[in-house]
Image (cartoon, rainbow, N blue to C red):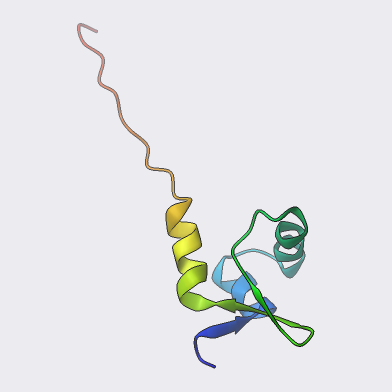
Length: 66
């Protein structure tokens, strides 16, 4: 079960509150999750991949003739 995180562990990993994790689930915008009975668990590799996939890479544009 080391690959599965509890709701509290996932919130700490993402530096968010448990309340934020619940809002994300409600809005269906957060990382994928599973139910183990009534308990919500996040699969660690999928959780990390979700945030990597949503990463924004800024592009720096250089001005000419400034």
